[in-house]
Image 1 (tube, rainbow, N blue to C red):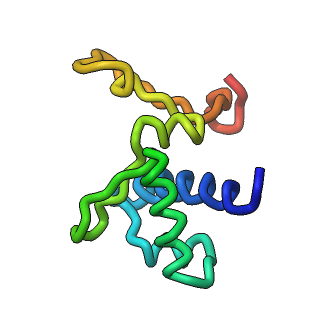
Image 2: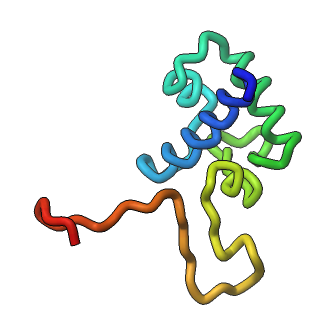
Image 3: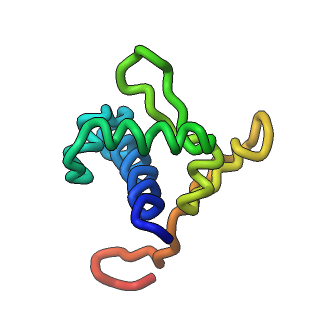
Length: 107
C-alpha cells in the first residue's frame, strides 16, 4: 500500500473517531491538526480523492458536514445494518473484537 493510500485510510479512521469522541464531524483544520499534515491544500486533495471514490461525502459550503459513506465504513472494517437496507431493527457496529472486562477481571 502506497503512502498516500495509508494516509487516506488514516483520514477515514480519524473522521469516524472524531465524530464518536466529539459528537460532530471534524473540520478540515481538525483533520490537518490531528494528522499533522503540513498543508491544508494537501488535505483538501486527499478528501477530494476519498469523495471521488465514494468513501466520504459532505455538503458543499456548509461547515462540519464530512461523513463516511457505507463504502467508507466498510473500507475501515465497520459494518452497519443500515448499509444493507431500509428500516433495520438492530443497529450493530463492528470495529474490533475485545473481550469485555469488569474491574480488572476477564469475563
